[in-house]
Image (tube, rainbow, N blue to C red; front, side):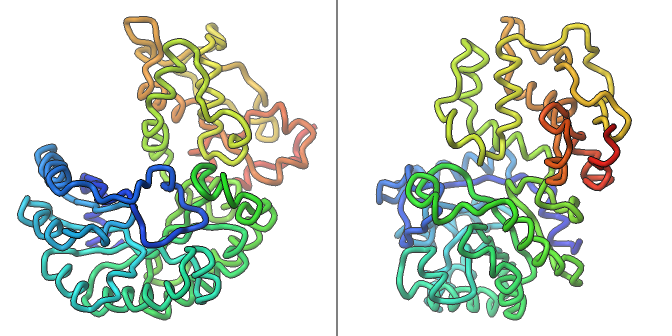
Length: 387
């Protein structure tokens, strides 16, 4: 890992939303429900920037909506630098960066990094996905400008039924332009993608596995950095090292803090419970949380025991839920959300291979702990060994 990326891993980040609007209309937009067409008032943005620095953040990330359409975006970049941030980054669709004077000023004002949302390598597919005819050449100009200005540039790709068959070609296209860092994002069952375009966007599991396998053959390319976001590990067999750090579950769960606080306070299920669950990255956590909220755990199972192994690895297979770690339940007798996340990661975070579907005890099996899968690979699971 180069020095810039090594430093980035340890930087405290502060995300600041600049807009509730976007000049694209992406089919899969997760944020569409929060869009009201407005920019966040400048004084509120500045106050948040100052607060993040006071809290010790070193990296300022300007996001949206589409942050670059905020009428004071360039001034806010400069304000971030003046506020003392070591690094200023934006998450953008890149279209405003296509105006060279705008890109030049952003860099001069202190912008150091830009993450471009680039979901295709052809205008027809790209414009369809982002809902704006002519968006592709604008975004490509923006990407070239950022590279010319020697900004740190990465590309986000939201994986879906329409672009997965071209994923390898998408990566190769941007690599040829000089981009060597990619984040592959799995669809989230909220927003426009699930509510309006579910049938068009959500792929079958066989397609996901096949196309990822073809694209991830590039993973050994020198200098290439691949990350995944909410992509289930069952699709990454052979590349388990690309599965996101299990501790990122904190971000996923605490973003829904109120839902889980209510669950542990009075047993109210999350309002999203239903058809979305099968496509939700935190389904396993949510299932466990509801079980523990109902008091359904084995009080004889020691909390400090090692996570059990599945039957194909010589373990008991299905096991009772263990007693929570000391401190997971607060003084008021209620489960504390962030403490439960830590307990879940340590004891309950179980995963399976797609091959496990062939196993006669799959439905009753606990699977393997996520850290075992990350270290040793999902190949340790072998349905043929179950007798």
